[in-house]
Image 1: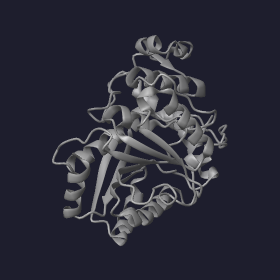
Image 2: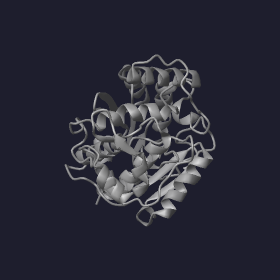
Image 3: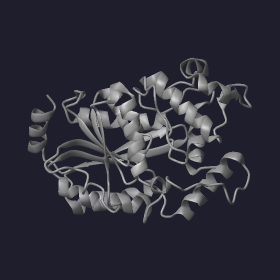
Image 4: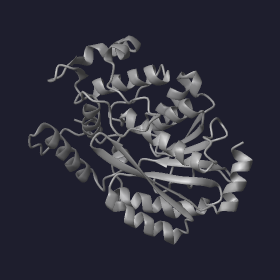
Length: 330
């Protein structure tokens, strides 16, 4: 089993329960149970993976990589009219409802900074740090709000695959640009161009500190889900290792992001990142204070029994924010 499958499994099986999904953002299109009849009508390839679960409801085997990929493909077709989409074997295939939530919450963040008006269209430019082969965040943001995206990644194959997705779907062209990060130790350096203005950044940082920690975490999730002890789940870190772990894990990645963000204090309005572990907030707040952030927000997110949060910060003072809005958010 691949590590992303276990995470997806925990989230999506809860999503497929008898009740609507709790805590999702009100504008999230994935509030209700999956209507597999509609999804199959939209994407017939999904049909062979759908079968009754132990409750008698239609579902899929979330331990099957191909089944999960076909579900994602069907959801993107049905809800976002993305007709051609796929990821290479072994690459992250993220749960779409949670990804959509992040986009809607950062849209609200922009709204609160714009006198309650939601900025739409290509005037808004977003940087997705680690867009991955799936290109999910830029897809949802471009289609839901018409924003322009820069998607960065340190994996050349991921960039190539995401670029092909954009080329294959007419509504994404002109909205999404993919950029390869040649130095895996950098986040903004080497990606943002001189004097390039970004309205908001998003990031789902690698959580684990090492492949071994990622494997142990995956085994723990499977054991909790199946109520069976799993000590050595089948893992393939291949091309997806950088999506799962980095030196120092989530905490160190966010610390580095904060340090680098200070160098772009006047060319980006809001910096944001997911923080999976609540205990990592304290060090983030400390680093933001040291970096000189003038405003910091923590936005709670939830899906089923899973909780997370977005941390957002800006270095712009009120006068600079007003000038930014007048010049860019017309």
